[in-house]
Amino acid sequence: MNGKILTIIWLLIAAAFFTIPLMAQDSITTALNNPPPEPEESGSAIVKPLSHLEFTLSLIVLAFGLAVIILEIILIRIKKIHTDETIKFITVTLIITSTLFLITAGYSNDQIAPAVGLLGTIAGYLLGKSQNTNLK
Image (cartoon, rainbow, N blue to C red; front, side):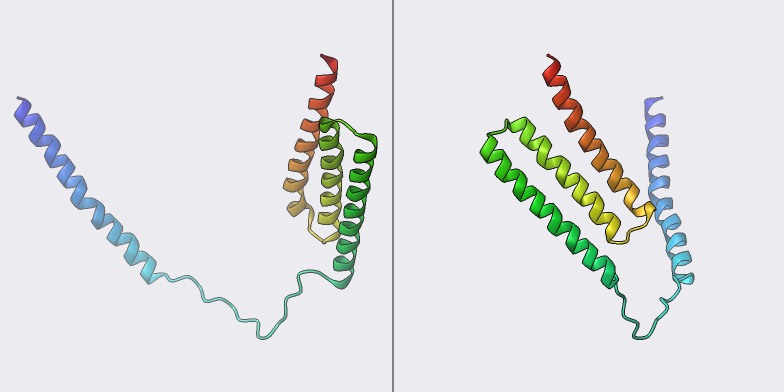
């Protein structure tokens, strides 16, 4: 009885082993018969990712963010602020600066939404974490 069951199992495995390449051959033939469309050539069009105004505003926002972070570092050294507060201080500035950069660089709402959601989550975690440690 066991011999018959093993024979049937081996036959099923062999049948599956030999039919899988046949199914793959059908999909390869279908793919070869239906090639993807050729890309459209736009000639010698130059793609500019940012306009002059967007580029200038983005540089101004980055320079402002860098200046604020430098001032924060000076303030941290003078006042000898605690490490947890320092991380919160600089990270919130980085989050605000990066969000402003995304906006001034000309990204659409659909492109900015995931990044702003992630940055908001990080800010909420940092601010909530520091408030919870002060309550204990």
